[in-house]
Amino acid sequence: MRFKRIYSSEVNVKWFGAKGDGIADDRAAVQAAIESVKSTFEQNNVVEGGGTVYLPKGRYRVTDTIYLDKFVKLRGDLSRGGFFFNTTAEKASGTVIYADFANPDKICIDACGFDASTKKRIAYNKIVNGGMIDGKQVSSLHGVCMEDLVVYTERTVFCGIRYCGTVNSKMRNVHSRGFEVGILFNAGWGTEFENLFINAKYHGFAAVHSVIGCSVINPYIDTTAGYNVEEIPQDRIPHYVYNEREGEDPDYIPQGHHRKRVCVYNYWCGSITYTAPIAEGAHIGFVCYNSTVTVNGSHIEQIRDYPWFIVESAVKSINNALWHPGKGIIYAGGGAVTDFEYFYNWPGSFRTYYAYASAKSTSNVITDNMADTTEYSPYVRFNHVGKDAIVHEVYVDPVNGTDVYLGINANNAVKTLNAMAERLDKNRKNIVYIVSGTEAVAAQGIPAIDNADVEIRSLGAGKAKIKSKLMSNNNAILLNDASVIVNGVDLEVESGGADLSYAAMFLVSGNCKLKLSAASVTLSGATSLLKPALGQTANVTATYAGCEFRNPGGGGSIGGSVSGGNGKVVISDASFGNALEAALAANKYAEPEFHVIASTL
Image 1 (cartoon, rainbow, N blue to C red):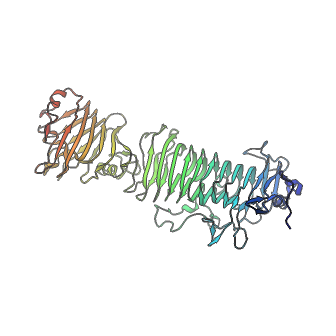
Image 2 (image 1 turned 120 degrees about the vertical axis):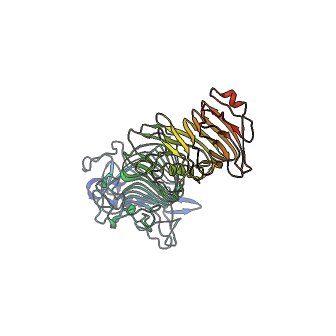
Image 3 (image 1 turned 90 degrees about the vertical axis):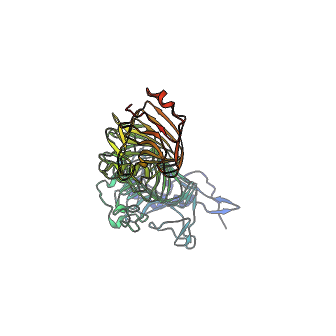
């Protein structure tokens, strides 16, 4: 025989003997109220039971875990409460559940399914992966809800709240303070968190394994409850922290990383979105391992190491406000795919965009600074960059091109320009900045700018220069089916060397576009601005606006054939913005060479 509950409105925990005075142990009363409304059975695809348990304003001391069940809503009263509250029983602001636990390995409020075979609850230190644990099926919890509550402790307690296996569930206006882990979310679908306030010791919000289609809206998350903790004690490191082969490959797990305090920890999340998160007071703002994460409108400050630590993850973030003085923002480790748009940076807020870009990462992108008042404004900067990392905007400092001074490679202009070419993204426009007053030298054997759209600019007052320096062979920039704009950067091709056949600034192949603007072009002797790569034919659409061409020694050309080779450059649709427009234009269709007037222009 089954008995059906007739009363369908919310139940009050005080009906079951809860005091809410901060002295009595109210755990049994709260649990009894939950048991009175929890889902009892399913009949004809209709779930019987479920309901709301109400905790009026007060301080509810509990000495053991409170367990939620499917279709149960736990509701408090924060109408006169807020983020900050008194801990005394008489003056508790809103509804406060105080975890006075003797055992530190506990969770204050646990909404978690059962081992389907044994009907036992999932231990606090187990991870559910895809609805399974230790090869056994785990029951899911549908329709769990928490609202208008504060969970709090002054003891050592593992976790404030766990949602595990929750489906189509919610958490709203919930505060978790003083726990080692504020809120742990493991294996959930379609679950939404809104208006969280988390002040934890080690990890604020952790989303772990099989998190799909979930969102976290307007959270404030910090770990200042453990602010003086330089390293999480070895025996208190959360069980879900990924530290396999730590230190063996810093592109994946740097030494000591598992002992860092973290605001938001994402591990094996299928898809999760954070909207307007505030993260502060930790070693790391966001950790992303093997996850797909979207962040909109973040505010991150008071972070000791990295606002973002990303490994084997795809992260998209837009509209970010940051305060991270003198440091790098993003650690893009192995397998990182990052795309960040619009940073608001307070004066002196950070030194580099990428603190580290691994050779094993791909498509590291920064675009469209909304506001940037830092000393080095419009370019991506690095403390360290792996050889094959790809970026959208590249900074080249031939003089101070070191890790310390934010260059791409070593203190060598050849290497910095070479590194620039290796990092160009073929799928979008690239902007390359060269520090004004410096001279970057094109490298022999530099990788081609291949199927890319590139603009090269000077950074700061005055102009930068690119020099094609003759050694045993010409050091040139290779273009293949590329579009290149050189804006306010002077060019020089040096004369001399054992082999003049490659004496050019650009060696081209395929269909290319070249636009020079406000540039002084110096072609020393019988050198060329453009020549084809050996044995290649190139068709170039060239535009020259406001340029000055110089040819000391005479014999130079804008486009010419390779000596002894069959390649040629065909210049078409050329327009010139200097005083010699008519003289130059008269020869613009000459093939295979387009000669510059022999005297200095």
